[in-house]
Length: 132
Image (cartoon, rainbow, N blue to C red; front, side, top):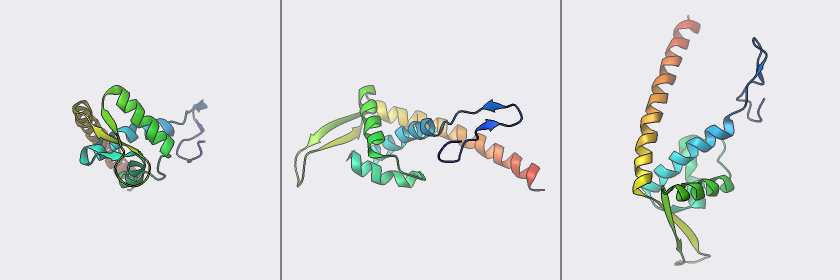
């Protein structure tokens, strides 16, 4: 079982190990969340980490994970960054979404809506079958 108790160690009926996919799920959902936050407002990494709570993460991803994803997204062309040397304190890298990133937000939105419909269908069937 994973540390977050969200994955079963194995399917008891079949004796099959079920791999924990929590980290993959978080990383996959983290990217569209970061893109949407950057669409709303160009920002720097630490501020993005602080704003991720609004997406319902039980635990916020650690800053290293966020920065790693920002670098990946920049390599893919979904975000661009520049150094902000104005203001007090050390220079900060400010990220903003690119037109390619905006297209990806649209694609993620379609996929998330489909997933939401599937989950709603599942929950409706569950309610009918188990809440009699």
